[in-house]
Image (cartoon, rainbow, N blue to C red; front, top):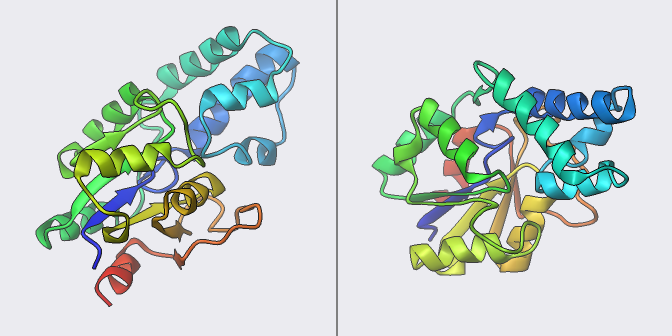
Length: 213
């Protein structure tokens, strides 16, 4: 029986896709002189911004690139993200049933806390693991294992939801059951690099069919 439900952040709880894309496009305009193919940016979703910077701007000073990215996101974040439909109801239902909820994200802590605070769901989560809290990042198992350590949870009692290969890879490497969520921008049509989630769901409420079915 699952007692611990772990969520990825971007693309799973919150729709931040366009804000992230636009922030990277600001960096492309500044350093490349033109915008990138959107699919290139989408392919990096789920990894840390530091890794994305190394991949997409290998010839630039990473701190300068990150400064442009973060400045744009800070200046344009108001009203630029929202909870996916059904997420608030899902979290409330899970809490009423006694499940422990957590977040494991590659996002930095200050924006993760800011965004869930503004969405009114911060108090739903027992543990929040961000890129600031661990040395290794998804798809390595470290972030998820740190959440389990803080929760005192067993692998077999835990299931994690995410929208990218980084999330599913993290679950597989940590020995935790995985769910690919398909309600984001790409509708679950994401390259997984040959790995497969244990489950796929199209709507948040379908989670109950898995953990209570």
